[in-house]
Length: 121
Image 1 (spheres, helix red, strand yellow):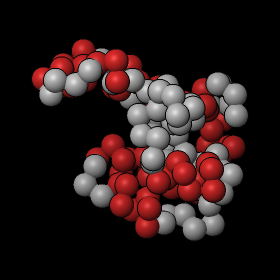
Image 2 (cartoon, rainbow, N blue to C red):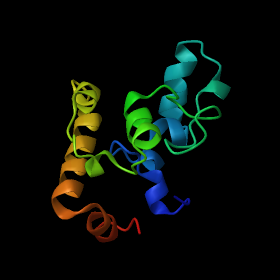
Image 3 (cartoon, rainbow, N blue to C red):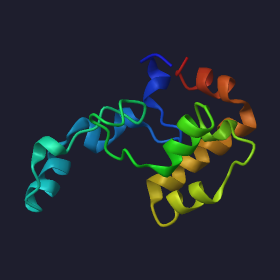
Image 4 (cartoon, rainbow, N blue to C red):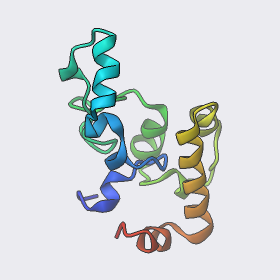
């Protein structure tokens, strides 16, 4: 997948281009500064970036399963969707739960149609 708009949509349905870590917002950096964390470590080039480089969560189970084990672009393409990995991912985290809803829409509509309708193609 190239770095078109859809490159910034993670396998799990999160919008990487809107992520406060990716954007390095003042609020995000202030949060980590208060925890005395090296701000050079607070960066992510998106879920489809090099997992050994600047990827916030290189051990992400969702990304590992979808992209690396199954060779899919999105969890919505998986015959096991939704799975326990995604359910754990979404539990208690509002923006993760919204991402799963995005995947449900993708599954219902068809991934390529959904992407086109939302400007990712």
